[in-house]
Length: 321
Length: 99
Image 1 (spheres, each protein chain N blue to C red):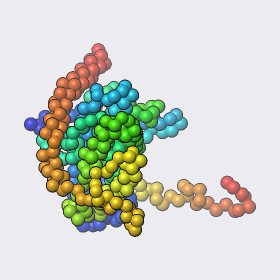
Image 2: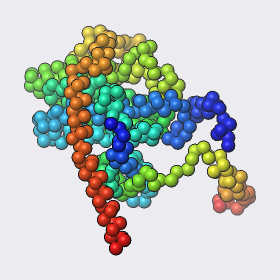
Image 3: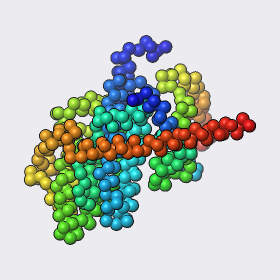
Image 4: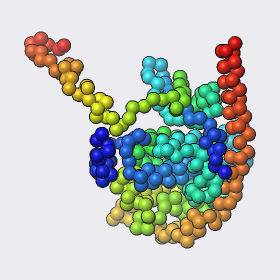
């Protein structure tokens, strides 16, 4: 058979030319081990982020200021759960099992987006999360819609469609707060003060310090660099903050006429590394909540399986009789 | 710890959705469920939250029989040399008009 005659190099070359020609890679196609591993890591971490991302908002489900806001927040959280599912399913097509991925999350072996290790202290935080955190996520995910791996790209298209409501509802909360009482306006400013920099950290390290970037670009898993996406987000978001009459907490922020985009300060990378290393304000609490939820749901999964088993047996007995 | 992990994992189902009457069911994604009924209700909850469908099929992933990309050449080859299956294979004079 031709497959056996082909050396790994030839397969890899054929793979790369397929990627270069913008053809999608599908689950059963040959792919280099590194490509598979990178995708499993990235997609499972992305899925974990969606799932853990439900937790900071869950805190506000019973505290949201009106029935309307509670219903909206519930719908948003449901979406995040769904996004986790799309991504886990897409990752499973690469041969990793759901249970393995859960275990990696629960043991702390796999990371999730550090942004969710920050606490949600006042109601405006829910607005800021929708506007800034989902806004940053969308910027990232729009680029991923063109990823070379078919199932990942398709999941991203679906996620992006749904996320647009998340950002708009968040911004609407910010509009209401920014135009409310003096105290409400202060809450809105307090929220942007705390969420601005962590949102910029969501795009990851500078390109020159990013370990996985160049290979991922070559494989077209990643289509746009961290710094470029971050700049895109800043340029889109600063005018939105101005419209709200809120201040972006960066004294170096200034419009650069020549490059037609914003100059801005430097991220506190010590803080970034510290939160990634597990020492953020909520790392332990988030993981514990996630583990408890999984263990707490075990009896439901067991009961559902036992019920399915029983139904199957009954049907078989009825058939035999 | 992980020895009966796979035994515990709920089976995987593939989900197909007809977005409106007149169109085919189309693969939408997959999910884990204990049985077919749970797969259907979960598919409704996850894949049709914004009226994306009027009909859902769920199929156990292990019941899907798929062709192999490696066979691509030989598997489809029999059709490659049968150009006479295409309308453009035939020469019809222009005078005849549209056919």
